[in-house]
Length: 424
Image 1 (cartoon, rainbow, N blue to C red):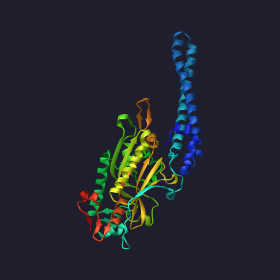
Image 2 (image 1 turned 120 degrees about the horizontal axis):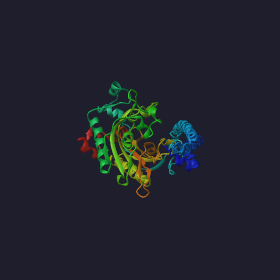
Image 3 (image 1 turned 120 degrees about the vertical axis):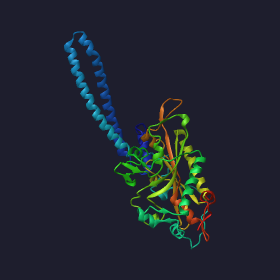
Image 4 (image 1 turned 45 degrees about the vertical axis):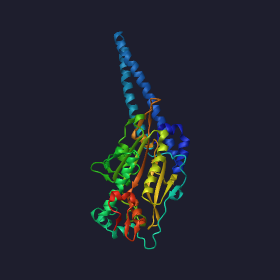
């Protein structure tokens, strides 16, 4: 969430910048300012009463020693009154702090100056594109038909075992899936990312730390008996490794990667755009996370974008990179690039990665800080993350784009992992 200092010192700028996200912050920002003002006034009153009480406490002993019994008793009575008043002010202060926190979590992150204005996907800015879409002809089959033809992904079996959106990968389909995971992890490690294998469930503090709670609780699977949440992405447990941590200069850059299954309810999703692997409730994803000092975070973001672009290029997929407009960005992001690959049989673009800089927004929730060597002060770090990559739509595009009369051709970079050149 935004810090109070940012809101207090840049009030109008915060309101103006959030308009790019189509968020009218005027009322809630003014409420934050007024609530914080009341909280500080209460704190000043409490500090003044505490100072008076401390001064009286020192005098009481001296008054008794000096035989001034009546004055000492009066001072004791006044001290009791002060204690009660301070206690009452503490209750009021806690109430105002709770109100303040409830307001702050409702304010989205401020978009970066390069974020274009817009309402949705049609207003996103094309940064660059690459690769060539194959001409498959009229006989081209969508990935769900190919999956059935070669018996590699069984959607009906997944529906039987669990429900819609939980496919079963079989035989070469399972091996193909595993090969992609290992390929992505190996590439991430070569780029300096340390591998983690985190828990698949997180507590409320972790969900709050990265911004899934209270904003996206309806999209998460909630294990109510234990009050735990199935992760929607490895970003959540990996970033929370550094919750309540103070890093030193020597710790940077912090670069992490993790493979996990991901779980999303995707409430309200229906229609042709969710068929097959296009939208699932459980899917595999390899994630990269960076923690950087503020002055290095946007250089790191560009580095992450190039890294993901290289992965897509090595797989031979036609792709495009979009800078998301304000209306299409997440609540927590300051700047996001989306990667889409072209699905030649479906004749549509499929999102396969989002790479984002959250600046200090998550770090403020996480209390993730570092000690500045020059000033010796602790400052909030910047957090970044990206998919490298989300598998379902990558698999969909690879199956469709690489279909031949002999079967589905495996990209050359994956063959050392799969042990076969074709799925047939």
